[in-house]
Image (cartoon, rainbow over the protein chains, first blue to last red):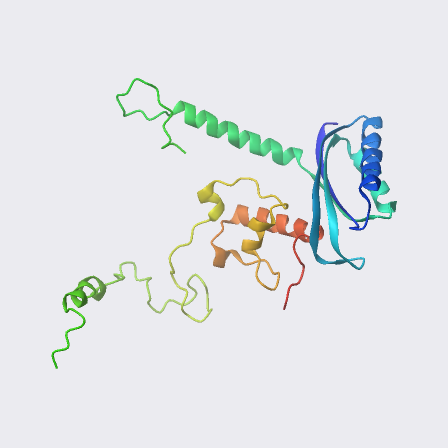
Length: 132
Length: 116
């Protein structure tokens, strides 16, 4: 459990807003019933596709960030595959990457705190911007 | 005859530093070294201005498939991924960059094949 995934999918551009909401809430419901959590839903709007997908040249992009297990993603993808308005989807696992980024951030913070410009005689304790 | 439009002072400024430019210290400058960096491109790109990795300099750690603007700087007109000897990206960042570009291609944010 606790794997974080980013699921981005493209919906055909002539789909209505309320249909889209229905679809997203169905997916969210699926996530919560399988014991996961939806962290974020982002509608990135209509964009021009870089190539034609199923004879569409535009599409509505939606990004869903989900916490859950692999089986949950399997189920979500199966649903997306059979949903007619969804023309493409991509799932990326992001928890490992996030761990790496957090570690780097921690190292940088520690480095910045441990080496605060030793030569200056100022006792004010200024956060020196020279360290990077 | 005496058309002194350009002052002769300006010409001396370009003289002395250029006469001995590129000291051939380690014998690796413009000498005939086959297999230098750039290989047998056309023979010109031997030690051209060591490019730095943009990601290392700006300390960008996360290369996301979603920022098309960043990724498209490393993609040619034809949609191909530009080799790192042209862009100067370091190897680990080039690997992550190419993964991100391929993901973006899959989700139709970048084309597989462009104009060419």
